Length: 230
Image (cartoon, rainbow, N blue to C red; front, side):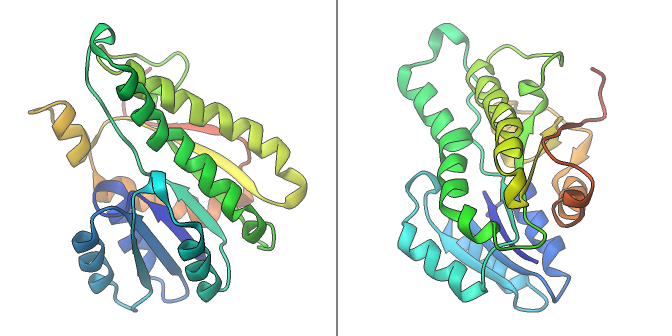
């Protein structure tokens, strides 16, 4: 499969790219801002099948991305994994905080989906995987300080359901994974000292499998991936 992963310079995106790269038949485009980390990631690819695109996901140069996609022969799967987490009380959140959170967690994904849909529509195994959070999952426990993050993740989940219906005749499956706590740099920065029950590489094994296989079984689903209840 030809797979694009955003937020691939660290955490779950980084580890997912490595898992997928173990299969020599996969071609992976890893997108993130940190050029050095992306180049290090590509260097670890056992089959040289990871391409790196260092860019701000909210300011992607369309022509550059489309050129790379054309060189890959198209796209089969898009994993919208890039995320921004701000831990602030609601009363302290500025308009800029809200805008930046939604730019990364929702609007960047919307732009990529619109840009890549013509390629996905040509694939026989097209799958869009939107990464959400239990913070954006209806009925799950919420945490103080995460209102902007949780609201943006609820939005990407709702978008998933809408696009699954709109893209059905194009043969594009659209699903959403709502993660519980995973030990990543983003989590550590937001909650110093907290120890999550899962490591990024453990979640990545599941994400890689889901991305390449789940389009055969699911469409329009928001699936909680968490060891806690609710």
